[in-house]
Image (cartoon, rainbow, N blue to C red):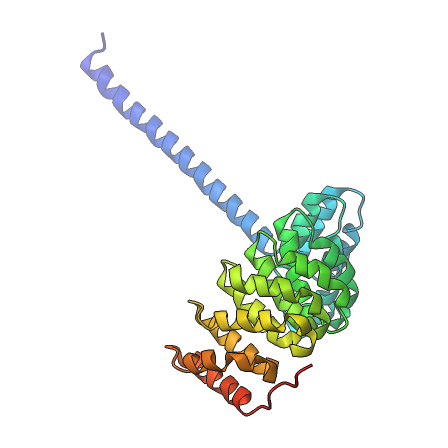
Length: 306
């Protein structure tokens, strides 16, 4: 059994051991924090620039999918630092390579490339990327949602009247399970204009039935952009769908339905009573556009009978 003196001496020793253990633990915590900070700094500063961009571009052609994946990721991070005018050329090259990578044979590489494409500004795609349209059309049928999103968003900025080859794929995309894809498909078809006439029946159906506001909004807008002549035999259905859009619960759908009716011209005169009601809409923007479309239709000559 310990004497009183022995017990008194053992307590300070135990306290010293506790203090030393606590100091050791604190040192470990500090080292861990410093290591994490160093890692984070390396991460945030890892976006490739200059020759590093060239390295990543070269690595996208590497036979090893892991190397291609890391290269695609690095180029996405680079988009955060390539936003000023001085880096426009570098950004263009990076985006061109990533768009091509959306058709990589490895699904994980495609997914990472798509994620990186979506990190670029939405208007980053320009005429210099027009050669990517064929590959983007193929990417619209990719099973990975991120790939389809990247493809359709880029197409929305690239397509025009000369992009008729994309109409079939974009029309099919109106039924995509991702509302983002459906919205940008509708946007793209409107930008193509009259050449997208084959998409009119699906656009009418989309306006009438899609559950997402933004999809219905752009379906309504695209019908006006495609125009009466191209809509042709589907004019009655298109006008009726747009009249229905004037009563949609969402303001943007009502606004674009009113605008498109004015754009269709005399063939949409059947919408005059509905537009007179829309002039009383609770939203002032809808009222203003409905009033302008109403004025256009009321002062136009009736469409000639064929």
